[in-house]
Image 1 (cartoon, rainbow over the protein chains, first blue to last red):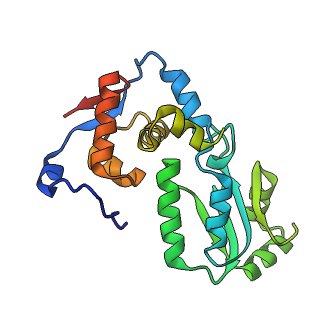
Image 2 (cartoon, each protein chain N blue to C red; image 1 turned 90 degrees about the vertical axis):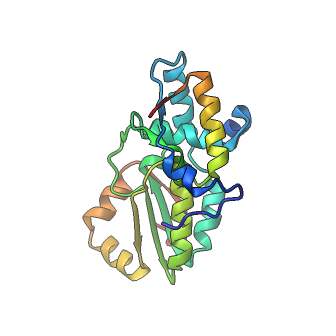
Amino acid sequence: MKRKTQKHKTPSKVIRMDKTVYYLNPEFEFFGELKGLILKSSPTEKDKMVKKILGLGRVKLAVTSGIFMTGNNGLDFFDTVADLFIVGDDISKNRLRTFLTALEAEVGKEIKFTLMDKDEFQYRYGMFDRFIRVLLEGPHEKIINKLGI
Amino acid sequence: MSKNTLDKLFGSRTRVKLLRFLFRNYPTGFNAPELSRRIQEPTEETKKELEFLSALGLVQKSK
């Protein structure tokens, strides 16, 4: 993964020597309440996400599930096959990588991501492919749907 | 509730991103450069927020 260029550079020597590890203190007075609040809020704004996905190429379908479902408090309640599923053609790999890196930074966790071209999706959709069925029968949201499914 | 609401309420986007990351990966601990990379925010800003959160008692440090 490429490192973002940083405005305020700390000398790299200091960074390498910095072994301090930070972790949450479960004894904090409002630990549980704060956890609920932080994890219940939607990890990313949907409108912004739709716009970015549309900019990746000729996107026909985008389905969010798992980590993006409201009420999923991050405990992997929904053992989803994909957090984000995109169907489209001519998807820019570079833009996709940048998009996913930024998205993972916002969400705070690795995203299960699947990409398919339109032909493959329609073939699999038509034959009741297990992956497609599990995704579309479980809790999900179609944030982009140009296929009328 | 939108993500923006929390950023405004907590007064810092980096602070909210840090907390979200730490809660999602709880109880794992991370060092500052790693956290900065994972939340895609500048190291200095990340360290500042980490110090703020440890002074508050929500975050603990260990060497």
